[in-house]
Image (cartoon, rainbow, N blue to C red):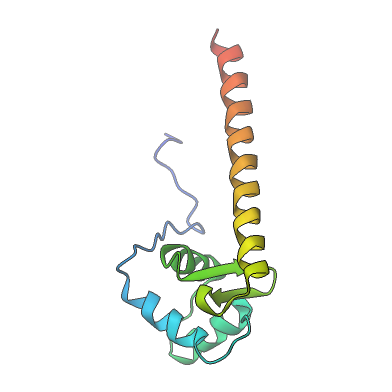
Length: 117
């Protein structure tokens, strides 16, 4: 079996683009209050429309909606409704995650380089 072309059937390769019409729906859901909604609540709202979306799909939509939506431990929030502290926390968290991903990639690169010479 050629593992380079075999994919786990449970994995979805959804990627939201900035012009995805569902971003507008997500933004509309967040305009109802000045508080953050947890992804589970957003997923329930989407479920009420008859479409079952995963947390990953919601994360991808929120990421594609940047800079209009920030995320954090409490869920998702419109950036214009967020406090400076909430926005700073989101920016710092994303920067930290990016640094960790780069460090992981470099470790894999060094390991592979040692393996192949």
